[in-house]
Length: 171
View 1 (cartoon, one colour):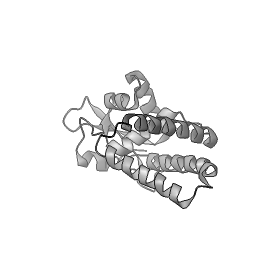
View 2: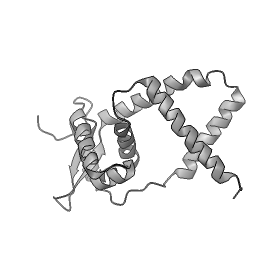
View 3: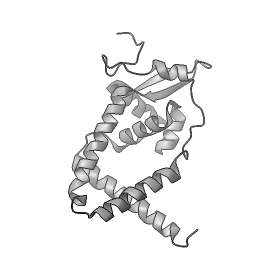
């Protein structure tokens, strides 16, 4: 391992946080960063339990409960009953939540465009390579402890004709 790798990774994390703050401020989102972080976790990990959402988003379980209630109310997430234990639920991102997260990420990228507009092709290639290397290095690093069955996931998808309502939900 190169001796400067720890410092390089520290710099990468610091710059990433700075870019996220600058972009979020410029995009002027009305949602809490915890909303976007939680939707990102749900998109990446699939249906997970509330305790795991709290752990992955680095928030308390009561805060996670309120956050998930907000996401469900917005139609961005759905709760799934565990097929093996009726006392347990998992949370899954809905199609509407996935679309909201994609739109927010596009807003962030648009907000950063002026900062990166004048970069040379070689600099853009360096950023592209760095993003790819980071993605490859971190792939599989966040695997949920418990997942619900694939059948349960299918029932939580939101039909295009009814955004915000899980499939099978009653009006």
